[in-house]
Length: 288
Image (cartoon, rainbow, N blue to C red; front, top):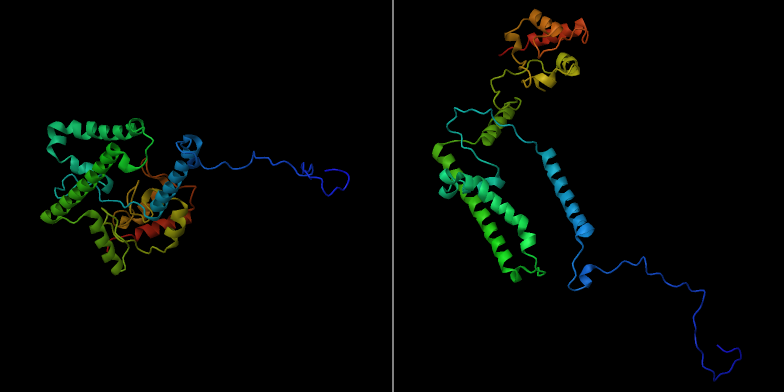
């Protein structure tokens, strides 16, 4: 700008040194979708998204595992001819597939090894075989057709397997174990009894379960670690009804000196009074 004030003179702005030049280094670049024909980087962008989805799914599974513990079934009985084996629901389609002639008997190797290998092998090779940039399913006839065929086959085989299982239950008059457990548990609760333990229904009920010998001394001595939380047995024999087989003197001797390799001696770990207290309580554990 000129130094003299001439109204006819043209004014030209050349900038102000006090204004700092903008630095675009920290500006977030546009999303990859803004560039047609370009794809997202697998590492780390895509992999990080997949990892986050996997973490959410894993947390969901852990919540289900913690909230709904797996029920214990009845002990295996090879003489039970009425038992109908049944896999989990997500394997029903494979279970039904093995019933067909071309995947069983003379073709059992194909049904159990080769056919699943073809399925999972095709799934692993899919990213390498389907390398087109098109992502719309109707523009990918081969991949979409195989996916639709696989989905229909899995749903159909699962439905047929479950329907055949229900037919076998009705024909043989068999009640599934998990339903039988629920029926017995509801009957026990209505009678004010504890839930029955599968396979151990004949164990006598516990006598004086609120006694300090059980709630205090035995739990502090970690007896329940081997004999079960309710003394129903586990790594060691059940103690319910032990009073019918051993006297108080025999129980004192067993607790004090141990027995065999499984029962450790508690001499020095428990006082004589505590041992006598526990033996007295165990001697009361008799069948009605």
